[in-house]
Length: 310
Image (cartoon, rainbow, N blue to C red; front, side, top):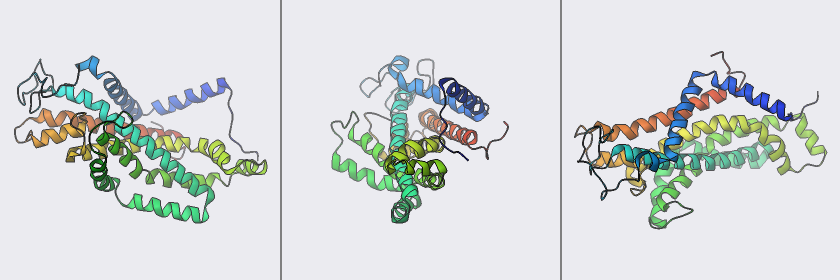
């Protein structure tokens, strides 16, 4: 039986995309997740237009821990800054960290998993033992140990690739400690794909191993990578929030986790200032849940065995 990667005409590709979107959007969770995600992406993209520049201690205009009002819809924090202003600006930092860390995680995990599954033998054994270490030890624990050391070494001043050192370190550490889950899934899929007929034909015509992995195996892995990538983003948001809550974030570029940390240190809970803790906390939960819903819907759409009629 002839087996190869199917190549579509432009019209066929449009039909395939349309069918995919129809099946994907048939899930209520997918629609809800996309709506919430698009909302937060829009908010994160234009914070200055929505709420003005980021408020600081010097530019705060409200009273200390003032409850929500017509002037401050989400109240103020411990120094009088508008919580809505902080949450909107924090969306950009939190989402940027989570998305860039996920890109690093997917690149590393896909490379390790595909290499291990394709070559097998000792390469597979050593790469999977390395993967097992990162898989068994929680990524948050590794990040908690590594992040303060790197921040201390690199310092907090200046910028690295447009990011302050503390934020840059958090992005890299989360990405480099969260790839094992992706690597194991990619490896299992690669083990199956490398035995297919179209891979044998590619070897016969003289394609290099790198070419086979990139041109023939990787395109077939994209659905699994996309579905699990959404779950990796949710995990990255939780890790970033936890690290920032413990004081490893950057107060000059506050993420949602940093805002939670500042509110906790100021005693917002004991003072009854629920808005100071609740606003960033709800944002973290909403965005994380959105990615989980999208990831589950993608998995159901791409995997016929899991597909159910919504």
